[in-house]
Image (cartoon, helix red, strand yellow):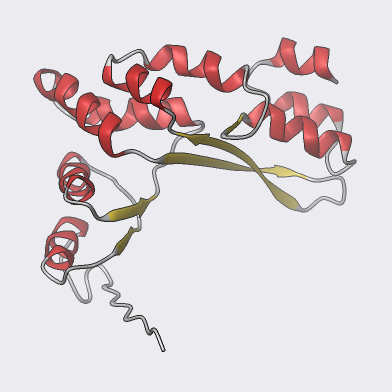
Amino acid sequence: MDQSIISQREINVDTESYVTALRASLRQSPDVILLGEMRDYETMQVAMTAAETGHLIFSTLHTIGAASTIDRIIDVFPPDQQHQIAVQLSMVLQAVISQQLVPSIDEKMIPVFEIMTVTPAIRNMIRDNKIPQLEGIISSSAGGEIISMDSSLLTLYKEGQITAETALAYATNLEMLKRKM
């Protein structure tokens, strides 16, 4: 029977910082690391090193959309390191899932997702620092490995879960979403 061991550390209780906890976890030979949030340069740097050494890292970042997530990670680093970080990120990033909550017809909050699986073409764009072009790839995607936020909004609208006004209020490309509605 396969069993798992889950080791959890609480910041300010079990460890002093995300970086300290992340470094300590690497000494325990983990298969998967869940890093609550990447808030600063040092945490992102250690997370990148962990990913490069073959660890699967899940983390959160406060951004809206896959392209802005990648942009934020690269921009946290000093300008003289950004190209190298883009190259490293292009080699280790597997996917970006972005979520925002929108009001439903029954006045509850429901999630809308953008999912970007990193394909060879996307790897090249990240490596070559063509992050602004990712928005076009994401918005023109027809599903499958990439689902745009607007596509998710359109699905919820067509399913009757959100109003047209809500879909348009949260759209990343208002005109395109209007045409598809």
